[in-house]
Image (cartoon, rainbow, N blue to C red):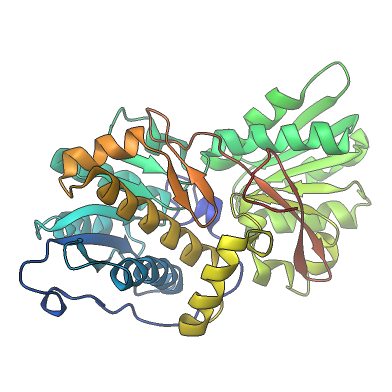
Length: 394
């Protein structure tokens, strides 16, 4: 699936584990608050039906958990928080319509969504024209923060920075001499590979890129070229399902060099697949998902979340973090006014369960980071990050 036409792309495999199939409920509905309470709505727009519904449900559950936490500690004069869900069905056209529906209720002061890059992209103008802040929890599509909109804020690094941060880690921790960057010819593959190659290429390291067409018609020729180059390291980027086939082919052809895969490979189900597991064994995978087990504040949240919803997924984690940012912006600014919220999001630093978050003028995160996990016996074990994160106690 093409990156701009993808419903997931960079983070399609972001889930740490599959969350419980719980349909979000409107806890903290308007009629549960005293009549004088100032209601602030958080609209979540994500797939709640169709093949990708679990991702949207996880995201909504994370937001709902943050709403419940905020309501449980509110005083009589504090805001009353509600979450309202809208189903974009992972369809770009429907996403644009649902964006409009989310704006019908004037008490909806902020939007969290969407999951797919293309869905988000087509809905951007709706939110911009309405002047409502949008927090993008997971999508790394670079174009989302390149439109000059001041109301767009993203939690994960854009795809271009993922490549650069991957190169930084490889340069400092691996120090290879001859790297083969094998990438799918779509927007994500191109963006990550281009910045990876440009950031790593030096007098000490030779980096050669090997594009793969989206139909794998060039697979045999590309594998032969990589074999002939005898690389001592591999960088694999693109759709995880497609690039998994590429890595399998490289391993069968005798390429034994260790590999770094980009964020789509952060998929527990993928690395456990019988045909891919041998090829994936030992590879590193980079993702914006931090190691919850080494973040005390995130561990506390994880325990509470799992007691109610089941296992925590990355979409649920980032849903919670996005809602924390939204709630803190309104509390710190003492207003749910959309214009004031945009200003607060632009200027403030927000404490979350995964560390402090703030935004650049274009809406991308300041000090973005990528975390690296090693695939061992069908599971991920944390090994390090591109940049230090004080919240990670390791």
